Image 1: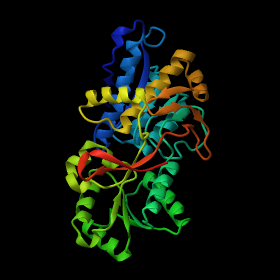
Image 2: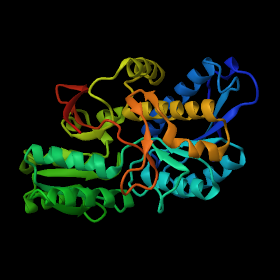
Image 3: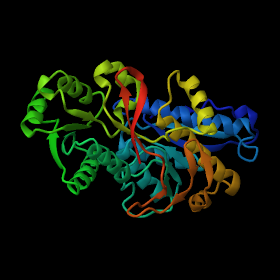
Image 4: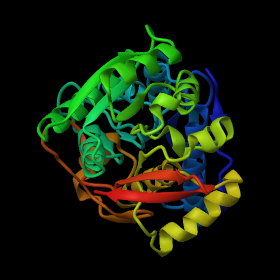
Amino acid sequence: MNTLSSPSGAEHAAGSPVRLGALVPLTRPGWAGAGRHLLAGLDLAVSEVNDNGGIGGRPLELVVRDTAADPERAAAAVDELAGLGVAAVAGEYHSVVARAAAARADALGVPFLCSSAVLDALTEEPTEWVARLAPAQSRGWRIYADFLLGVGRRRVAVATQPSVYWASGTRVLRDHLASHGGTVVELDTDALSPEALCDALVEHDVTALLLLVGHPEPAVPIVRAVRGDGRLAKILIGAPAGQPEFAEWAAALGEDGAGIPFLRYLPERLGPLGERVGRELRELLGEAPSFVAFEGWDTVAVLAAILRSHGTDRAVIADSWPRVAIEGTRGPIRFSRAPGIGVRQWVWPPIQVVDRDPADLDRFRILHTG
């Protein structure tokens, strides 16, 4: 298991460090691009905390573990981090991995602030030990379904792979579209080649294809096949899970990757804090920061506020989720109980449906907000 430390400005604070564990997918089969952005946001915020005196004069230290999208590896990392004495665990992008981490954190009594995973059932039972910044999948994907209905796409196919996350998303879409006269057809990408999938889209006469699959495989070959099939020229390709957000999508697909709507969790306009953090993230990453990088920064901002106000006792940290009230990069952050959600939840982050502009692949067009 990789052992990494944050290159934060710890020299600006004195005393023994306050340690935070960080779970991040940095290697395949994890989505390494998302992990890089998440870690950049976490690191930047830790550096700022230390530049401003740390936690009561003690430096904040990030202890990073690469989950590689492996739930068992994430659970083992929580065990290890708990043994290292971290005050809390933060991060993770993949929902099935975050679910494993949340279960272990709950069992061990370690606070876990999940940055970027959206699966509604992050824990089997309600818990006080886990909180989440990302919106629940049921909310975001219903907003995406509203977008589809608004542009007249009611006959929808979903290209899927076996996963609790994809199955949950399919259920959200089916239920919401069905209540408005829509239909959802499931196409198993493990059983269908990209070419056979194109034939199925024609056979079912669908008006939209949603990619509920991994990136780059099989998402990239599917997009290329659909874009190259003249029978499907009018079909809308969508990716609610956000695959087109990252630069490697545009690098792999070029113009074929434009015009594919996806969900991201940013406001229409960032405020002064978001603008400032966005500039620093861009400099750190060498490219435009994704919403995942902002989620990383906000995660540390929340935990630093709790640590400064309430100290490092784990039970006290977990008990403090309902008392959080800070300004994040994307708006005011407060946690509460949401119906059907077992963890403390930011209700709600801003949600957009956007796509890459065919005329400028580096520009995102806001298509719908919720």
